[in-house]
Length: 175
Image 1: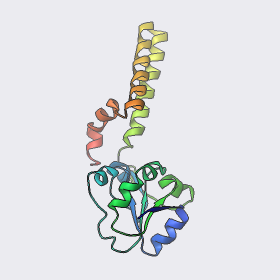
Image 2: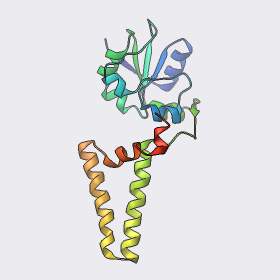
Image 3: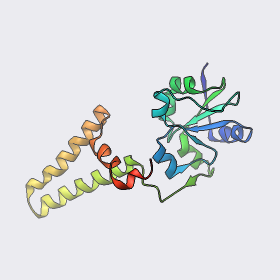
Image 4: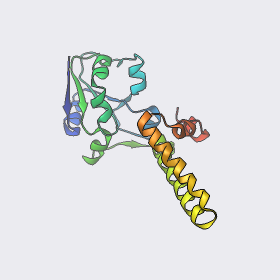
């Protein structure tokens, strides 16, 4: 069994004919914004062995944020599908929105953790630079430490700041 890449337009047409749309982003991202017909089945659950429920013989379409996770995890997604017809929506929800298809958005849900990391890291770097110029030049080290942390995160795939932010009270409600 193999998967085929399809456009958001093709996905929309297939959904109208009964295809099952699976959103593999994490649950918090799904709750913040998702395609109306999508069912949440995070990639972390799929890699832990969970399969698509109730697809039967209907085609299954997987999507993520921009298409990278679906493409790089195609084998695991095919294995998790209970259908012979597996498709990957190219471009993810970003392409879906670019094609002006509707989404369900809940602004009461917290921002995705990666955006929280960007905001926090950027704020700390700015604070370090401004403080370094105005108060004490040693405060430039704050910006350096944050930069080193971002490099470490990119190289290893582990982000301590994201781990910490996920434990914050505003992020617990989305689980």
